Length: 249
Length: 249
DNA sequence: CGTGGAATTGACACCCGTCAATGACTGTGG
DNA sequence: CCACAGTCATTGACGGGTGTCAATTCCACG
Image (cartoon, rainbow over the protein chains, first blue to last red):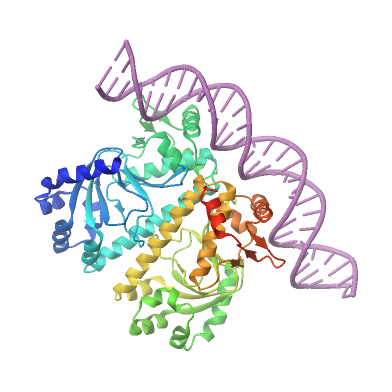
């Protein structure tokens, strides 16, 4: 279902991909992307390989178990990465935003699924062709390694959260991680517009929607967060939230 | 305490490091290590950088938060990697065995601690010097990237386990992952000698020692595993265990 | 105004953690 | 050779945190 929609969108956008290199040079995601590690000639080469993809919210574009044919770079929007069990239980292993890179796997098939949270723009690359190109630019490969290491450190932090933190500590930690991500893009970090649903947060924190909802109210009652009519979250006291998140509170 | 013991062992072993390259050429860990991606001249160069370290069981040699000065390659033995909270809660994010590589981080300080499970041999490298060397051997860097990707995939699987699996599913999954690791080294995979304590398994699976112990007896009662007098585990029916682990059972 | 998804809130149950006691084994000293 | 201490593993009784099930509210959208 979702995958069909994705294919359609891919096709529809092929026409819009004429002036590739101009798009790359104007790309707002470049400072946060792999491309930032490429010199000018490399940028031209990678631009020639890219297919620009534009997807609506809620579209799956990577399916666990499918042949890992493509790699994706997020230039606008945000996505969730998740794994599922046969009975439907789902674990969101991470959220990726502008500059995020998907698909650099060793396995021949994807080990996770991915779906857009919001309207999202992607650069799509054929895996074999991108790998051949990157082999010529060691700096880009090193950048990729650094991205993988960062993701690994994040994953270890998330394991700590899932294995050992209480429900309240988990939500506090999540809000702070999201806030840090916002600051990374130059935004305040104290006014958050969460692009994901409560059920996504639950699937990320190893909890149920009901528990997440109860915790949001609890944090609001304690004055640790504010929630306005539009659902926007404010963090009036990040230090106290930090204490909660680390179990010191 | 432990760190002092480690330093002592490091010093004591410096004398034994004369014939480095011979040691590398005879190294049983080579086919599983980063070194396997190095050509002959690279092997000589990396051998010159290595300090051979020999540690007894239960020795900490990486401390979360310390300056990330060294990288380590495991040539014999096994270690655990973990993070801790202020109040002592601990999450073991992974176990590493022969060929395992520690310390390739982006941060200037270690993001996790590491401690030996058994008597362990390590090759220690100064980070800056190893990085300079690797920059000359792109194939080695690509190998490192592949290792990081594998670790990332393992981490995502572990997040699924911690966030969404029941206690019994967790233990079954753990036994199967360990079994697969054994087969990777050419061993049977149905006769397991676990190098870690029950409390380590608990800290890895997000459970308590008591629960882990109860689950071992439960699996034994169900005939899913055997435990002999020495504590060795046998897996008479891996398929059934697999069904348990994936929630299909 | 009607519809459907998302979020919230409540009542209750249960899995697993907590606390505590016992057993198995190892190494040490008398 | 045995007494002893220490660590690790096992087992039992009990309680709490979080999941499950269900009802209600809220809101976007047609």
